[in-house]
Image 1 (cartoon, rainbow, N blue to C red):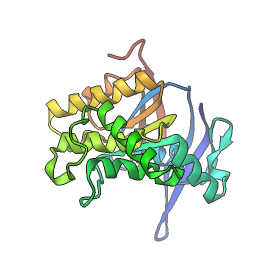
Image 2: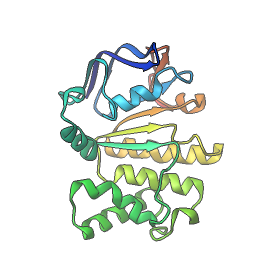
Image 3: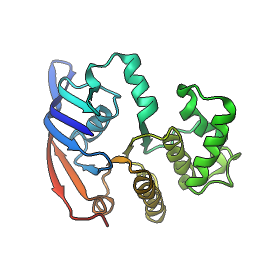
Length: 228
């Protein structure tokens, strides 16, 4: 479970102080699904980075399973990210010279698994996102949707508890967008993930049971009875 209390994030721009987040209180239950929306510069990605331990709050607490991420030493925080949190971004960020399987294996390197175990788990995870026949293809030989599936597999191969996605369909057309969302939603349901996604796409936001709207660092929530 995530528990955020009084979270602020302040940046300096020259002499100016900018509050990206201003007193955010938020609880996300295990297995919960939350979509974050808001205008550019409103604090969406900042909140996602704090949830993922990629940044630390200026004030307040970001607690995951009873552990305050903002107070952890960097080595332990890196371990939490490596073991428990999967990340998917708008750009797939694949390594061009590595095959699909090798790219997915990179998600396991921090865990110290043997090479044979990494290969097997990467192959299984690629199969779970519909790419079992594309293991040895390079990113340049894949479509945009396939590359994003590889990126999802890389996030999932560690078997995380949390999946964080920042505009994961932003570079895709409407049909491929829907396919990728079906993959993400299927993984969320199958693995009981805590799933948090940032998107500008209102059609995608409408599919989630819970919506957080961020404006000028402040968050308001909309609850729905059931996801579409």
